[in-house]
Length: 388
Image 1 (tube, rainbow, N blue to C red):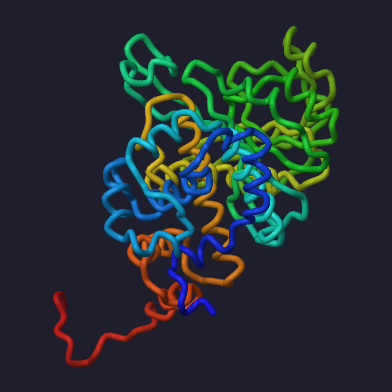
Image 2: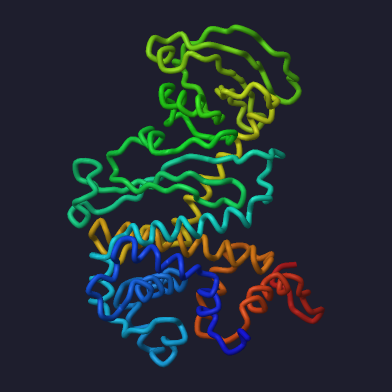
């Protein structure tokens, strides 16, 4: 029964601990470690993430204040600031990267039937990059500009459930288009990306693999029209054309025909041009697919606001990458719990509730289900109104 278990322990029950131990063994994460295991480190950092701790000392003080409950948390060692800092600095970040990927695999299976705004059976990914600014004097391993440091998160987001399926962490100097070299194209899947990823030689590799892409065309793009398809101008479509690239380098990189769609946005009156190698879907569906790319922008905004991904408990490259992957694991874990418990509350609401109830012994499903129920409360008739 979960009635005698702490909320944090109930949440951690959804972790595949056998997989975690395999990840630790793969990179010898506990070689010559006598206490404070990798699991202890993961649980401490996950607790810090879910309760919005500010520093290592903050983590130490909070957990030591509940020392008698740490065993029930799953933490088997004494939590010390120096021990946690050393573990973040030296234990291979790939342990937590691999474990996050296993959680992502679980989440994707749970959200495989989740709608995302376009009625399409194929998998749809949104690809984008966000930059996290850092202090150059502290994070000297991540140079970006002359007097500025930064890291970039290159993210491939599965739009069914907004699950990040691929994340690459680089310094600020890496151009986003280079991330296409590290992606393994999935046949039949759609990849939505902005103009920053427009490299026809790299996109041709996706075309040969049987994948589809939707991107924006640049203003200086040189093409030759081969055929014009009829369009319904009442939907905002201006043209739907089959074209070939005529630029010297672009034609060498991509010799196959492309589909060029011009659309007038009714809200902004702008007329963006979309390029795709898919000739089957209706033109308006292609424009709607590109509109769904905004989900990855919202994902970046969400994690920066609610996962505190710009606050780090260490300055080394290993510590930063470890913390980012543990934060991704926490995000995906909450998404898994939301789906398994069939909760109607949003991820934001779930995180806020968990941040205040980690040491409670309320069944997790009852605790999180109260949010949706609380929205139906009616204001009593004798309650004074602040505004008429």
